[in-house]
Image: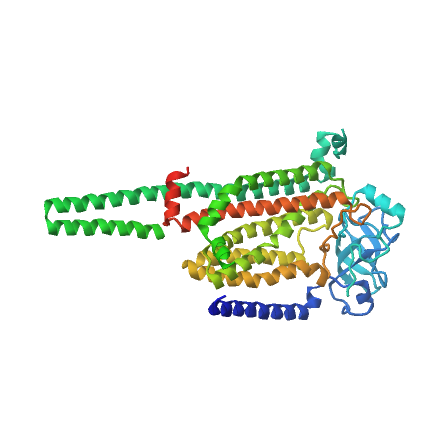
Length: 157
Length: 104
Length: 248
């Protein structure tokens, strides 16, 4: 390679490297701001200031969904398998909302410690399978659902 | 047949309905088809107009070259030096203009 | 080796080679995308959670994954332009930007249509995967408009090459956004053809086929527009002039 070309290539690599480092540091500094939600453990640990509007993400605890017959009001518990936060919501839930699935809710914690959600979104996990495969996995006891936090919910660190 | 049995639907209506998600599924596949069609048809269309324009340009250039030739021949025969120089300059001028027009 | 490299960069060589290979590429693209689409729409079993909306993901995953190839491609082409001043590299880069913007847009649109039923929202500004993909769309539009704003083509080529190299950082952010931060968007699926693993084999075979098909389509579209670019920029060269009088 000719010397002037090598020099040019070198300076391009240098610029690219410098910018990558700068971008990496910026993103690292913004880490908490870029996270979409707090986990129930973070809420329990007092990382969220009282009375603040925020998002919480976790799994819907098995058997915790209680709907009211005459309204769209629903109560359930979200968990990250370490801490739990009860959630109250009035409105239409997304199709994928169900027990053992991940959700993200937006709202505030009231004085009773209940998260009053103004919006509930369902997370989908990264596993796609047919009902037959799912049934076979359940029968074999190898399904990860509800047993590991990897499905639909990612632990913080 | 195995292949036919593997089809997930019993009827045409069921296929169109997509388990109740007809709008979403068909919107996405429709979008996908448009996306592919546009990005194949537009370059093909552009090629057509480009070839037409380039050919036209080629013909004009050939015409200009021909004029230039006949002008200089006429100049030599008439032996009218002044006239022919003026004429040639004019023709060369238009030739250059054509070339400049091409680049823009 | 350098002779080969220089030959590769020759527009004439590329044009003639692509003329030979185009029919095969067209056939391959049609067959693969056709098969993947029919498979996805007719044979793919519904997901145990989402029902038939998982069929949307076959298209979405294929287009989204492929859209990440544009900045690296343009960065390599840009580096070649800056260092070796190879004409062909810039022609490819120029046409890749617009096509990449299309890919990013389709990724966002199909994702939105899926999210509207599965998540319960069309768009979330707080999700880093969604926002970084939107950013890629705008960056690519930026490269396209930078090219048309700078009329002097040599300067435009250099500016776009630099922007393309810088844009690669965003590709890394898109790719790892779902791992670095918590998001509504699901992380990448583990690829597995073994049945009995967490992912059923059906979904992944269809998606892998679609990814291959979308890459073929990308090459086809990019080659078609690059050939136009070659004819345009090389119109004064002898070989194009000759081509005009022979080819229809």
